[in-house]
Image 1 (cartoon, one colour):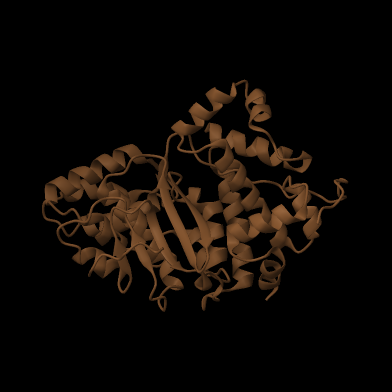
Image 2: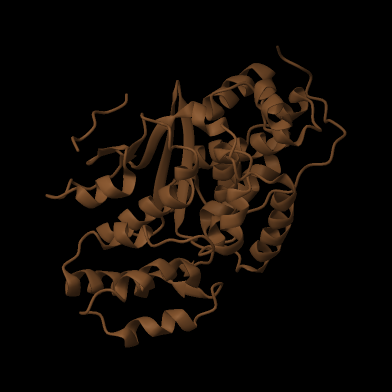
Length: 357
């Protein structure tokens, strides 16, 4: 397959009489970890290699699916397995071993969502249940949706490929089967043989040495209904997932503390980096340096928090759009509407109508 080319009125600030929705912070551990269910596809694949002794794989089968496994030793095991077998495409092959039920509640919750946009938003909220090292962002540019995958820890090629392919197989493939513009992107160089990539992402295009790992696809597919959508089952699974999230260890990351402070102060106006840094006992420069270590910035966290809350508030149907703009720290509705269109490719009013259908 040939490598694809690059795809290219104000209102008074009177405090509204409403109840703020609670902000759920990502409940991730200080040491990145997987849920043991993430290892099932690897275990199935590794049993097919005569070079891998069963004694190394058997412990995975004995684990509780929700048991937390530190990522670092798992990556070391994967690197060793690639070295022993000589199979650089192990990550792609493992993703194709994923079967229904592997990822438990979060998998069924995603499949019961109304459409891909809702499924992606749910993953952003509940992904720590299975993998608290993976982060991602979705943005819409014109007719294109760009989904960027990132990791809190450096990943060898096989692990990065698995992360990308597993996201595609378990989520995106549900709505992209008829999207000829789909493109899978990788930051690493193209291998000499791309057969396994073509097999995994067919009939999509491939782009290597891309500016980010992830996917580009037609933005219209975000709102196409899932055939498996089930509102009643979905609500039950979300309540169960909330219980599981509450049981995860709380994050000690500075970026999560910044998110919490930003969310707390948005309704009083756009929080300044100076005030947030002072609340954390840091200078602006120290805050910026520490956030850079976590591969983020204050402006990115402010933008992400606003976007997450905007989707919740607009989707709730209970708040006027002027109230939502206030709660997000905008002094006028115009900037809020422009920001919402940048985040989603549509207006708040049209997005709300779509949620009602």
